[in-house]
Length: 213
Length: 192
Image (cartoon, rainbow over all chains, first blue to last red; front, side, top):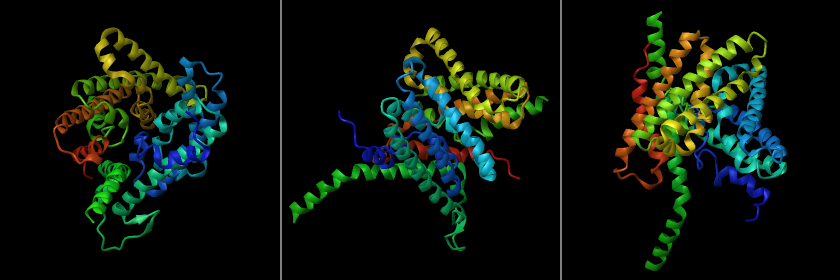
């Protein structure tokens, strides 16, 4: 099997193998911090930073790693970059870092990063790993933002704190509560699965219509 | 003192349930909740690792790292301790419950990347618990996770017989079920 082109590697993370919506990994931050769009974007940016850095470093070290110790080394590399991201957030975006609370250090155990280290970075060169990290990171941010927009819009009438829906709309408080997170993610995943599996059925239907005509 | 401990236990287990309030440990919650017996096993494995890791990280952070001013190594030390504790549990289960070990498969070593464990360790630092409180909190949080995953497995065994629309089969319907369960659990919140 030949390696996919770099462009394909990039778009892979955005849609075809979107970590949250298709691969169903990295659920904890997805559910926990999507109650507002600003939180979702910050979380996405922090995770993308850690993902890119750890992917590149692991890719550079891949020939030195012993198979049985590699997981431990991955965890240590990831934990180092998460510490950097956490301290940077505390220094420059203190309120945001308070709002995200323990979910910033929890990036360490985000399965996306470990999965990409194992699937991509441990087998390919630094450039490909970098592109993969950017694609996967943006795909993750994309999924978080969709959920954030839906939940903030219906739960607080706002997007990024700008009021969008009129006063007459009664906010659905459930959407910013934990239960709304499960509800939104379940519906979005159902929608994505439907979009992905719909095509063949559609073309068959069209053929039936043509035959009937 | 006893009343405070009971309060910490109940808060960790039910009111601030790790799955339904903090969304920690969602991966095993979705992955290992197909059969009740496996869910119970997973729940107790997580409780055990959580207790060991919570107590060990408390000892290392409060008695070693803060004394020598290396707090910034917190995350790295925590993840090393958790990985060690998981190895310990893995060896124990493989030796004494080989059939359970077989059915866990990949999910046992993945407890290392279970955010519930690291989450518990971080919460213990945040709330500045003492030693006994740490012990009670970790057991409570672990049992809360076991409760959540067992309820879910019970429902999913019944769901196998339901006629679910195709795109929602698997994760979709599981998340929607979890939404209703979370709604029920939010009923435990104390009104101000």
